[in-house]
Image 1: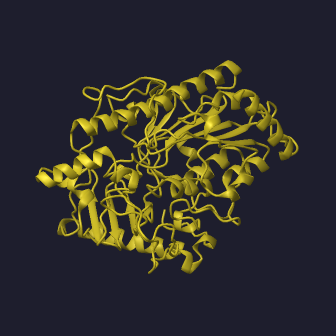
Image 2: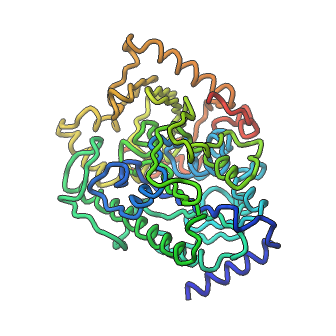
Length: 485
């Protein structure tokens, strides 16, 4: 029944799209963009986690190009995704906060691919706003049809696509977003022996069980990546199909999601394209997620819209050792709770500013009310937290933070007062200010308030009330300046 329903959706939407376009399906690469939900970069086997079972993603990395320094513009679901979709910083999208819809006047890179003759489809999670509907021939966003993890229709999509056009798929599984599934396809993980507890969490039975459910959902996603690859091979189109695997933000645990440290905005990014990328490559080049849109457009022979602030990194596919960016920028705006933070990162250093130092950052409500968060709170009462574990509860927070990424990879020691780093601190302070000025970033006086109590998670009287969007005072959604590169 599900397949019949799916085929009907495909046929109707393809007919409504009108025409087949003129793109040469033999030459233009097919593109599959898989964006996992709330998955940290180091929770994939290929990135060093020797406990999690991700054989298909690990194989994808072995057969393609693995990016070790890909950074998101926000550690928050929809702002991160809208940034990728438009190739713009969150405050330049008009949708800098969670669940804020993109405006009609912006250009979305899948619609440019459609104009080139691609068949474009989105399957799974869709919360970038109704305006983005025009970017796709097919939207299959019904949760029942997609299954609990969101991956059930992936192979069907390949089967029922128009065969005379190249295709772009935005595959957005719900894995690994809370609440956890009661059962999952793929490998399971023993909480006692097959879990690596991050240093931001306390090692308890409850935390391990929480992490095991999270691992299981990642493994389910991995399972369907394997099924997808089998179907590409069966159809004989694997050679010229580019597959990307990435995620929208860090894991939904305290110390990760909504943070501007690497734990929040560093993301897995694996690209496999047999026709265009040699197997077994790794790049250390610094790349921002706003660069994804212009890269995919370049591969399709499409000039990016003027609104795109990112730049193509397609050259890394051939020369992964080549330097790309010097700076990547990120921002933390409202996500369940009021916030205003900005960051700039280089290979060596991370600099963060916080304009709401009186507020803690224990993550959004799904993180700060989790079993892992409750274990942290229990340990806090006992006075047994490390400095890194206690950071989720810290108030006031520092107005400025500076970290040496190589000497302190966990970014746990704030060196802002260390005179040894006076020169790079001065440089990054200046660069961040330049980026804010050039791109029209603003700090609203009336930020969107907390919708939930930070301790109990209960709704506040301000729930559903919005404040001013960052950047709106300068109409940043109409500013196309790229900022420092």
